[in-house]
Length: 178
Image 1 (cartoon, one colour):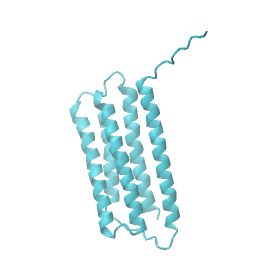
Image 2: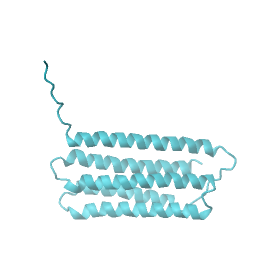
Image 3: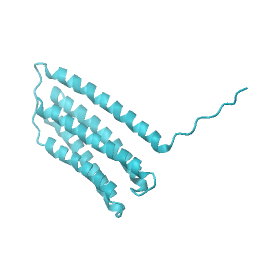
Image 4: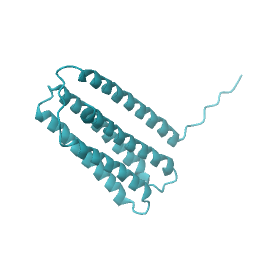
């Protein structure tokens, strides 16, 4: 009779890494499929891209959030201030993005295909940015000087930078490459 041994438990940081990679992969597939739908829908005659004053400001707030996460990770001596700056910049982005979605809906309504895609892509990005911000704050809750924080803080950095790059791609697709 052979004895069965249980496999060794997976370290928490490794499990979090696998979860982050899976979540980012799923997010990439979601936005790639919506981008494909946008490119197909753009070829129809009723497609009229609208100009908006807020895309650059929204992108700047997303970039500010990326800068803030870097500041949090690099500033180990001032524990409360950097995390608060990251939370504040994330909140500023989320608020501005929700305002942009409402402005798009109020402008010509969501019956216009371009406006509907703007609202859809930005709404999904807001949901992912909210989850990413909560994840980053949870990861950084131990502080950058915690024993396992080096690998974990790089995951928070990866998520925030990925979402900022995704926002830039969305803005390019919606407002530049039209």
